Length: 463
RNA sequence: GGCGGCGUGGCCGAGUGGUUAGGCAGGGGCCUGCAAAGCCCCGUACUCCGGUUCGAAUCCGGACGCCGCCUCCA
Image 1: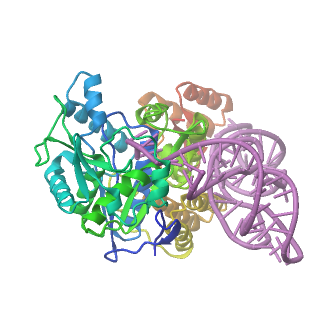
Image 2: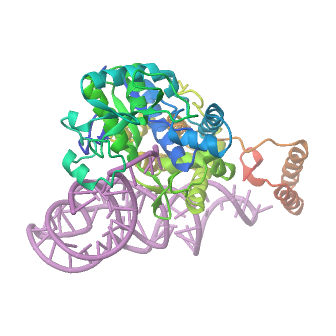
């Protein structure tokens, strides 16, 4: 049984699936109005890992993540860049998938785009208007939050206290400051779609409810997103579903933010580092390891110090991969291609890791267990217990593969010159010509290699 | 004001009422021709003040500090 912290109940609970063995997940995706930042990267990694783990555990996972391709901020960006909305969308959506692929994240099974769902959204809004759950103003259609009895469920507060804390509302026509736009009437020059209540565009909260229900069906299993989406975005999605009489997400899960000097990283605070910039100087696998080494609900700081720490830890894993010539068992695909036999000490490791991952994805503890196994494998190999060593190393490799972290045994392509130097050094060492061997090692180091001796002779790799 | 989270050894970061988290960095040792990699050993931490308990970093109360949501936001 998989357990996950449920944001509605504020506690870790069993994942109660609609269809046993199958997991339907909707993960709120980006508004493509800017380059993805490190926080988006964490988001993608967190849910990629959850998805992979569920697949590894044998569940049939249906993973949906949307692209918001119409929004005020996209329109603003098009204006700022003196270009069109479609061009902004094309540019930043491309940036998004490029960065996420570089992170080693598997593509979602479905990637719905809001603009392909406008007619469905209009249909939903018409229904809400018919039931008086929404009303029309001079600039659009708004949802009346008082129509949902338990509005505030995700916020963890009743409507009254939410209203008390609401900031000063500038829109006098809204019945309550908490009411939100379902439809925004187009101003001149803005992209628009025809609708019975006037040409315009859908509100952000309306997209996700329509797309998730369309692709995953009523009563789907899990809805995820950043902690900042819990309220009001998810609250409002749910409110529409409730008003429309559609059973919505059975579970809600939210991940913590990337922090910058103690403050939340955010597009609006403009304190972000783009994912592209991070990946230009950091191994993407190191970022995945950094994310794995903290709990998904905790805030993390991504700094040169923490990424360097992760890179050195990763080097230890790659070192194991080289020693045992391990090849990753999963990459682009989610299935871990392995005929690995989980038995004996491998089974013990699997059981220990599974126990902590099944319990609210305690990846830091799982990683600790895997590092213990790394040491055990090395010790066994040092002691000449080859079978045990190899079994453990393979198990570590399989489990990291299952989490999307590919161990790398390949130290870099060796050019002809370097290859010759390696051969010469082995010859010198065989002849016990140490000064010549050391000279050749220095030469290799100058060429940018890390030189190690192994049972197979000189091995070189890139640092 | 309402609601929620956090405060662990040099750094990152888990965690349970009593037993080594793990990683990185640092010190010592083994291995090695010398290194590198690997292995072993070491630091004995838990914001503060009370309380419960045979025993609390872990439970309760309080204080202080930090962060977040209530507005766009992963």
